[in-house]
Length: 136
Image 1 (tube, rainbow, N blue to C red):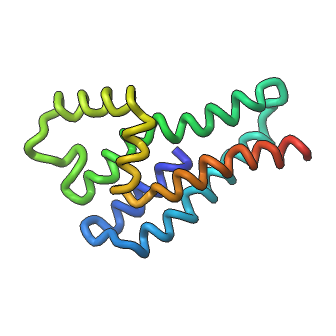
Image 2: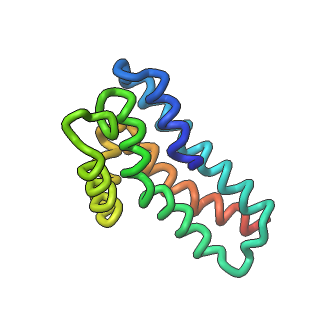
């Protein structure tokens, strides 16, 4: 949620006028919020026994839920769930198949969503945040 919620909010505000300034904002905002959230969660909870598992689950959480949240954010610009030519069954089958094949779909859909660099940066920052937190 920490990664994808700001994406949904920015797409909701900009709607059809989403452009490169918003993508640039998301490139730095999404990884910063994700790393900060991950850091706070690791500071406030005891993850000493499962540090690697916590880092992997943080990254996988962003990647696995990517197709679903990007479908929501694209709904603000007449895509995603708001498409009139796609019924509920079509949308659900796409979510199921894209989640099953999440590495390909999240990577591909993030290029259109404007979050590709944010996704890659966050995937590198979360392990670094875990290492920083580990030393403290």
